[in-house]
Amino acid sequence: MEILEKNKKPYFILAPMVGNSELAWRTLARRYGANICYTEMVHCEAFLRSKRNPVKNNWYCTNKEDRPLVIQICGNKPDVMLEACKILQTECDAIDINFGCPQEIARKGKYGSWLQDDWELVRSIVSTLSSNLDVPLFCKIRVFESIEKTVEYAKMIESAGCKLIAVHGRTREQKGVNSGLASWEHIKKVKENLSIPVVANGNILYFCDLQACLDYTGCDGVMVAETHLYNPLIFCEIEKSSIEVYKEYLDICRNVPNSFEYKNIKSHSFKILNTLLKNNSTLMVSLNKCNTLEEFYNFIAEVEQMDLDKNNFKMLPYIRDRKHNNKEDLK
Image (tube, rainbow, N blue to C red; front, side, top):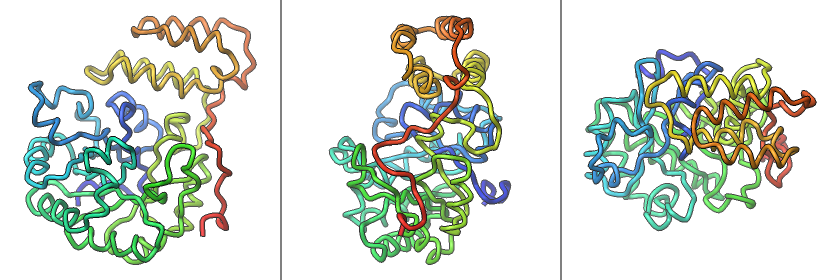
C-alpha cells in the first residue's frame, strides 16, 4: 500500500477527533512528527444528504500538502457507506471505518463500537468497502473484556479485507471518568495474531510513552488523540512554549484556506493554553469571548505583555482521575 510504503515505521498517527482534526490542526501535527493524519469522523448518511459541496466542508477539506490522509467514516449500511466512500476516496489515501466510538450518540445511531455486537454486519461492511474501493480500507476498534474475543474480532475484520487496524485498548464501557487505563496487553495479543499492520491507541501522555508502547506491544505505530490536543509536540522531542505553538496554529488558520472553523480555534485554544488558563480565571473569561481570528491574536498579544511565570506556558497532558500507566498495570 502506497500510504504505508511511503512512511517508515513506526507510524506516528494523529487520531480522528470530532471538532478537532481539521486541516489547520493536521497541518500543525505534520510539522511536529505526525506522519499520517486522520480527519474527524464523516457520517455517511449525513454526508450523502448534505446539499453542500462535500469536499468544501472542513471535516475533510484538504490540500496537496495534507498527505498521507485517512478519512474516517461511520455508518451501518454497507451500500450507503460505499456510495459515500466512492466520493470521499478521491480526497484521501485510505478510508477508515469507525468501529470504536463508545458515545451515546453512536449507540442511538448504531455505529462505532456499538456494531461490535453484530459481527456479521461488521464483516459485511468491511468486505463491501474493501472489495470496491480504489484506496485501502483501515478500521479502528475498541477491545472486549476478553483478550481472546478481541483477537478473534480483529482476525475477522482482517479476513474481511481490512489493511490496517488501530486498536484502542479500552472497552466500550471505559469512557469519561470511567475511562481508566487502556490495556496494552490486549493490543499486544492482537498484534501477535494478525499479519496486517496494527496501531496502538491509549495511555500516551509523554514522548517517552511512544517508545514504551511500541516496545511492549510490538505494534507498527502509535495513534494519539486527546494528549495531542494538549501537546501538539508529543511526537517529537522539541520543547516550545504553549504561546509559540498557539501562535503558529493561528498563523496556519490565517494562511491555509478553508482550514478551520472558529469553533475549532476556540476548542484548541483552551487545550493548548490549559496550564495558563487553569491558573488564571480572568484570562479564561477573556478567551471565551473571542470569536474572530483577530480577537484570538489580540488575546495572545495581551498575554505576552503580562509578567507571568514561564511555568504557565508549559504544555502538559490532561490527566483524568486515573494513575499513569506502567507495564504491570497494563497486564
